[in-house]
Length: 427
Image 1 (cartoon, rainbow, N blue to C red):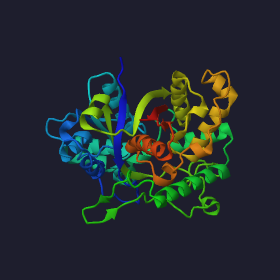
Image 2 (image 1 turned 180 degrees about the vertical axis):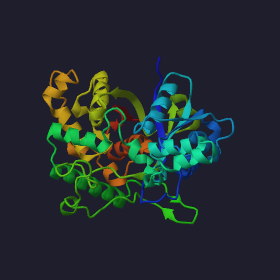
Image 3 (image 1 turned 135 degrees about the vertical axis):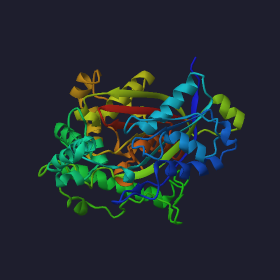
Image 4 (image 1 turned 135 degrees about the horizontal axis):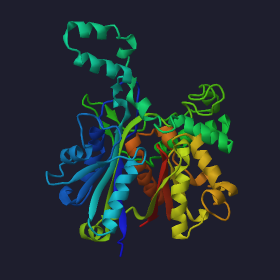
């Protein structure tokens, strides 16, 4: 028999926009910055955890297995097992899902599950031709051989490539993530103005959530070595308007593309943790859960349309639980691109798509805009890849509690042609 599993509490750092140079925090720094206050407000000893799991995609060379490094820096003890998971954009949700399944099946009682990413620390890498030249130079024996190699030296060998650019290009289809969003915009008829309007809404919603204090218990200040305090998601543009969003040129498909820097997620640094616990652990430590984790699902599809991953991952959950669209009070659908989010909405409302792809008899329905990403999303606050899946689950739990709602789904598209989804119910 499976056991109930609860999301007890969680916290994240502010999501900090990358600004051309390495930011003040590494992935582990970020995990520690929000982990310390989260653990400090718990009524149990921090060594009570059975396991630590952290999602991280761009692991830096000084922090191999960042889960273990973070666990040690957080004072969880040398005996604490900790491992890192990587499924691109789904890594932070994968950490929760792994914890959920361990606890549900009875092998663990309480797990710290998170995600961390510092995209501003993405490495600069040499192009392949330069790597081959340096390798040949190292193997050249004698002055004559080395002189011959020097004749093949090219200036571009010394111009590095940002590793992130290569990481965001699918190795099978050779499309970058923005181009996959363009494919969906064409398929579902999403025009530039509609995408820009969605992006503007994301900024306005996040700005309101910040000003109303709705994120205060979720976002923990981060303090850099020089004493600088970071206390809010700094990529938000409260004054965002359609005139400003109309200015950027298409980023990937000029001149007619729909995806721009203004209606795409931001390159960002950030981390998020949640505490996942069994019913026995909740009772033992006198905890008050935020939500119960009801179900989860992972799906796969053609990488060229990876943005539809949320549709393929979320629909089976609703079917298993016997729920219709109207039964889902809130949706957190990671905003990789405005066109991608809007394409998911259109796909669920498309009878032919739902019949041919999802196997439904009719359309699943159209998600009410007032139930979708109600406090903004990655377009306004950023998408630190390894952390985003964790953040959307945490924020869904907090938003359900704040609004007195019952049930919600957090879901995301995942580079490489995958999707992830998780359903929560208020505890």
